[in-house]
Length: 204
Image 1 (cartoon, one colour):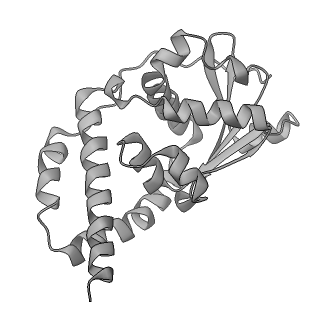
Image 2 (cartoon, rainbow, N blue to C red):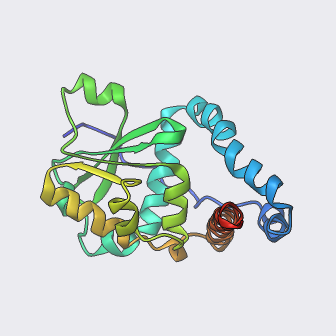
């Protein structure tokens, strides 16, 4: 196990109230504008997120995971990752992290830390940011995405099943209300836009 420092206590992430309040307006935009938004968002976010120092990424991700998996953490739901590593890849944002469980807390490692300690992942999980958003917003079922190969879990079979069960247990209601609202509105915007585009394509 890596000798990683404990996560310092920080306030939970908050979403801008102005942003959250303006989200319903996006649903009223013409379809071509909504389609453009969901197409360009990964391209806009990719360079910004990759420029974030790993320490900042780590702090944000661990705080978010500790919130959405609060019940699992309280009930030792991450014990299967004790001395094991889960590789998480968000494919369209080209982001990769390694997650493990040490005693009673989640720990996270960078690519460099994994290489320096000659560690490798025992199980890997990958999906696009859009599909992860749809899962978090309860607009898509993980099983459906798994069978469509939009959500990929590879490696140890038993660990992979445990990872899928954790994904099923995501609870965004544990996030601050503004962040929870942002996730729900964003997922609804994305799914609604995709549905409208599909219906348009199927209409003679």
